[in-house]
Image (tube, rainbow over all chains, first blue to last red; front, side, top):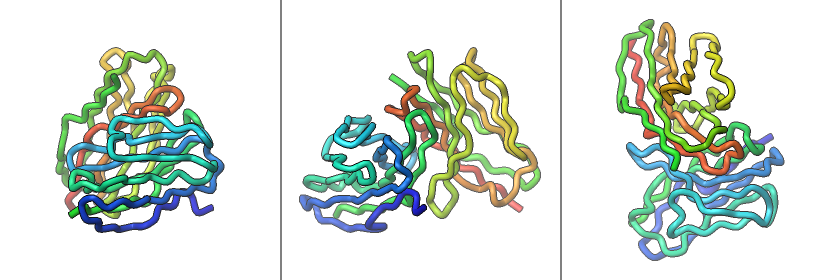
Length: 111
Length: 114
């Protein structure tokens, strides 16, 4: 099992550019989520999905879109990158009510 | 709204000392889960423990122990005889019973010096 994989590991964008962070899991977990980690603030939930075709907003959803067309994949789209979106992004998956397994993270810098 | 507070931003101890990391939470839910995760310098997040709100029994796993007290809304984590490899950022987290809204504390950076 590869667990939770994220690509890319590092990314530098210019303000206004768009991009998609990829997340995939091979554990057949129904629940997947995206977090951002900023210094001194822990992890904050951006969006989550409880199954294919179902997504919902977390604590800090503005500026991000998600979709869940398959159980395995949960991409995060930045529509128009801003410097405030410079962060480390973690994807996670789990069975409902169980502990979440996190990917290795994507370090994003927006200039 | 759910909230987790880890008041200790940084803790520094000398190897073999015991150390307790505090976690206080707020929730209106009657059923919920509490978690601890470890983030070593390499950056990955490592699951340590999950505790549901019905189970207030303390838990021990090797040098790690957890004290859950609903009366004070606390879920503290103690490392006994700390080691240099315990140096990491530790996060406490709270979720509803379906994991649909997980809130993390700001984390406590633990440094264990040889």
